[in-house]
Image (cartoon, rainbow, N blue to C red; front, top):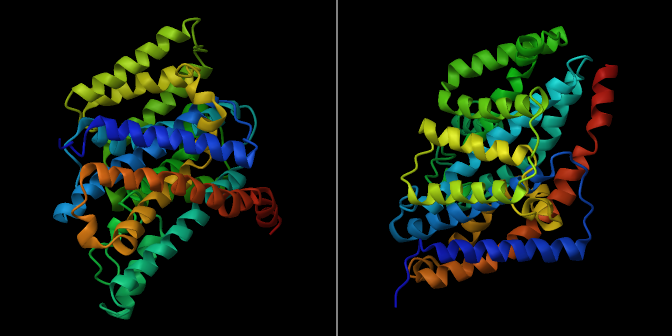
Length: 389
């Protein structure tokens, strides 16, 4: 009996393997989880990043078959790869708008805030980019296929976090496939960060460091004009802002009905599965906001989101998001012969993904401990050095 490659059972299989892998590694490592105020959101981040991994794994199955990189014809797998990113945008705007709200009576250390964004995002991104560049030249047989100045420009575009756009490097058509095109979201993250001093002035009439305000506003304006970002994603960020406002100003709290709130979350989730969903539909944005608000006010989804293994997954979520495409590319381009890989049955393919899952989580834990965490801990020191100059 043949099984469809997009059968939901495969989604459940990989999710269960991911949860078990996170549970075991958290126990073995005895990883000390960082103190955060919103535990449910911490756990949510991990599942979102992992869902993107599952969604891209599904895309890879068909990419091996027909050489076309595109979303798959499955509501579940499509949503896991695309809708998850929208939640990331809401999380970003929620947490940083709360930071503005909580500091409206005292000045924000803007230098530290922007340094913290650099130490959080840049090291792992450039680590991932090293592999992108390496694989590009492997696929190019270490030959220069474009003029040197063009190559330098292409590399600089990638180093800009997509703020200058991204393109194929050295005429390698699979450049963006190596990273599964996940870096598209980073330009929106940076645009939001650039807008923070302006939002602080608009909502709280709070003055920022004049130089920081001028530079950030110019950067936001220039890149908005150059990139022509999709306005829809700004609405998604607005959802996080509204949720933050509801939590602080309106003081919405999780009612004493966590069971029914969790049931409501599950019902909305299944609604996504059985309806034709396009992430650009505004009713989708409203439903996503409803889900996010329920989690922001403390819904734990029957306690799942606040478990240690869920929060462990959340702690390494950035590594999962950036590195899973590289693991998939390495596996299906260099480890498993192409002729063999493209003829895998759905069951064989997903069993390989199941084997890759604990490997991915282990790698991401290592990159978090050896790359992300050490540099994040230097935020204060770097800030002090800059402010002294």
